[in-house]
Length: 218
Image (cartoon, rainbow, N blue to C red):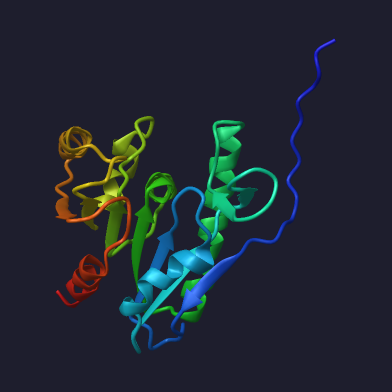
């Protein structure tokens, strides 16, 4: 006899880390999404240079955690796996919507900047794909739009967004031809991103982060 698959929605505790203060005086809010196997409390440290009296950063953490090696030791988080993927996507989209709503209640005048690193890039794209709200800046760092995502569904909010791809020239996870294929795809959807590369691997770069921060003044 085949088993019957059922689902049930449950309350649970999600975790996020914040740098800076959220208030009516906050003009810029960055929501940054970590990559596979990372934890928000460590990931957010890279964004300390962005914070000032008008800028705050929030790093939500993926809802699923696991041991990085074996059955003990270091722990990482992930946004999703292939198992029940549509439910996992729906869950993290709902979660990130709540994070945004919470933050903008405290900082109602803030422009929203989104950054996704590696797995977080696909995550932020899927989140933005259902958005009906403005985004000042979208940064896909060491990642691209998911292949299964219909770009026309996200093209409306993105056309009003500064879209930037960032990758390290020695990042073995981001091939240059893959970046070019992605650029061709997004340009066909009417989007015209900027591409920034740097001498580095699969990592963040503070010089590039500061350049992205300074762009907010434009």
